[in-house]
Every structure is written in structure tokens, then in C-alpha cells.
Image 1: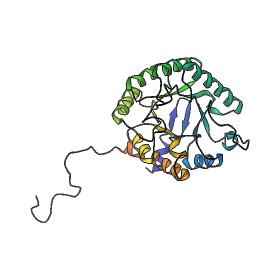
Image 2 (image 1 turned 180 degrees about the vertical axis):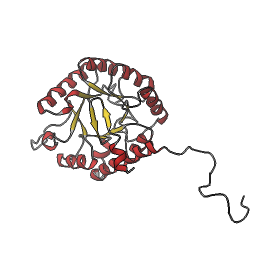
Image 3 (image 1 turned 45 degrees about the horizontal axis):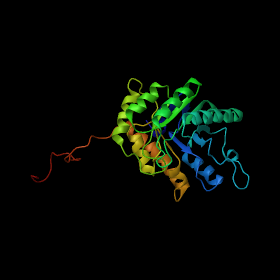
Image 4 (image 1 turned 60 degrees about the vertical axis):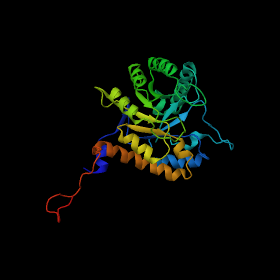
Length: 278
């Protein structure tokens, strides 16, 4: 089986959406719209997320970000970044839905939910996130929840109807990677119990390509990132690296790593050797 065939047999399915790419990228923090456009292309992403509340829709020259996004090619995932209450998040999600319905983009039926606890850590407010999830699910949204790496909270969000739970690897924009892989493993176990196809997406904290590969090797279904590309010294090159890392991590996860051992195991046959050895 070729790598291409393997990828073709395992699309990323999130609710009613299906994609080949497992890398989701943001559109903020780029120096120019042209650079953003190039990085989206290089990343191979099919889903891009846009902050409805905070996104700079028009630059200093009066150009609109939407003029640099091929709406026939990308599914936009509107997000509620910058919201600190459930009420604000629900209001922003509905605004995003109206915008995308007007653009006839398929992303109108879903939302990346962020309800933050404070500006210093940008960690999620678990109580408000759960409340907003219930309200948005009742309103017909497919909700992708940004949350901490708490397995119990992850399970509560799924029970509330979240289409995908997205635990943070580490705080937003921190570049620390996956700080607590054991918690991510437990999240995966809880969320996929009797539901192996339930999508779990790492969101936030990614600093470089190895962080993406590691998250995928843990068994996550996709990675969502922004700053690691937009703020890299060479964003185009980093976007390419992220694409390759996502693919490599997925393949490694499916291939199955060897078990870790305390002592060495010879990789060559131990029969017919010269000398007695020790």
C-alpha cells in the first residue's frame, strides 16, 4: 500500500465534514494578507479558522481578508476567540454563521468554540464552555470545543453534544508543545471509548513541526495551529514543515511504534557471530 493510498483511505471526518488534510490553520498574525495566502497554500490545509470577533477584516489599504481566501477551496471554521462569557461566545458564533451563509461557505454550520477564563493565560473557562456548548448544540451548530487537557472535562463536553473536543497541548501561542501527553492519552481513551472515529484535535501550544508529529503519534486525529506558522522566521517554510509533520505523525501512529525497553535489543541476528562476545 502506498502512502497516498493509505491517506486516501483515512479521511478526517468531523461531523458532516470530510477532509483529506488533517492540519487546520488559522489566519491571524500574518504580516500581510499575501503572506497568509501563500502559507495557507503551502500548508495543504482544507479548513482554515477565522476569528469572527477579532479578525482584521480590512487592512490599512482597505483590503478585505476575504479577498485573499478562495472560498470555493477552503471550508472556513469560524471561531469565538476573544470571548470571555458563554453569552458572548454564542452571540459571536451566530454572527459567524450569518456571515458564512451570506458567502455560501460550507463552514456556516459549525464553530470552533473558545470561552476564555482570563487574558493572562488564555486558558478555557470550563463552566462557561460547557454552558455555551449546550446552547450552541441546541441551536443546531456542530461545535468544536477548545478545552484544557482534563479528561473529565473532555468527556463532559462530548456528552453535551460536542462534535469534536480539542484539548490544548499547552497555552495558546506559548509554543510549548504537548506538555502532558498522559492526559492527552486519557482524553483519547475516554472520547473514543466505543466510538473510535470520534475526532480529537489538538488545539493550541504548537511551536514547531515535531510538536505536530508528536500529537499525531499520540493518536490525535488532527492538529489546529496558527502562531507557529504566522510568527515563524520563515512562515512559508514552516507551513510546509507542518504539513509534512502532520502526515508523518499520522503514518507513524497507524504503523505502531515499538515498545520502549530499559535495555538494548540487538538489531542483527545473534547466531553465527565471530567470537564469544559478552
